[in-house]
Image (cartoon, rainbow, N blue to C red):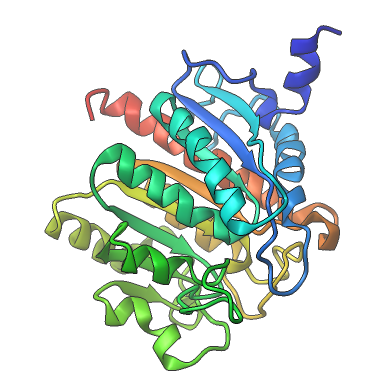
Amino acid sequence: MSNFAFLSQSTFLRSPVASGALPFAVAGVAWDGCVTNRPGARMGPRAIREASHMLCDGTHPHFDVDLEGQLCDAGDLALPNTSLEGMRAAMMPQVEALIRQHHMAWLGGDHSITLPLLRAYKAHLGQPLAVIHFDAHCDTWEDHFGEPSGHGTWVYEAIQEGLVVKECFTQFGIRSAGVREAREYVKDQGGQIFTARDLRGLESPAQLAPLLQRIRHRLAEFGHPPLYLSLDIDCLDPAFAPGTGTPEPGGMSSNQVFSILEELADLKFVGMDCVEVAPAYDHAELTSAVAAQFVWTYLCGQVKRQASHPRG
């Protein structure tokens, strides 16, 4: 077996190793130095890639496109396991090089990786981003158990640093314990929050349409800023995703997330991450399988959008 063949067997969807000629790419950010409960998300990128191999020829049943000739895999970023700031400093030049070449999907890793990603995108695009954020947790705490930054502070930091258009920051699935100031921080800053309770009983595209229309109106109101997706797998109820570090009962269904991803696929996203998959706590690979399909669905939706709007 050639080296290429060996590597492609371990890549996402068995796609070729990174090539600047291909428009889309995935890369792993195998870091979990900021988890507050169960460690193991550094193994997420490997598990998500392996789960993606069951997608057969990869033709998406809703979008009717596949990723052959569109997608490559840049492997895992080379990161130290020393400190958060050391990791972020090592991340930045690698991220900047990749986003200059590809539309990226990042495989985490814990949620502390999203802050440096947003820093890199803002620097690259020259403007703050709109964000759609799926999570059980608001991630708006001002400190990380006495430390200045972590996987529960990135939303607060991103707003404080001006990395995002705060009025175009939308959260789905929030339900964890927290003081009102943290739970409602995004809304208090002018953004939108659709809690897990708000979403109960809303699963089909038709049922979710009024909420999604509010996102579209907000983006239009602020001139359609570049849009980023951050998807923490613990937005799902543990029945759908047990393999995560901080599971919270009462979460979203996989169908709800798929409906939202599919219905918003015509929006001009610039990148996404899928984080907090911790395979050591998974059962029957449920979590890595749904994570792989969320990433696949996002990428296929963007391939479809670009085919329909080649200039935009």
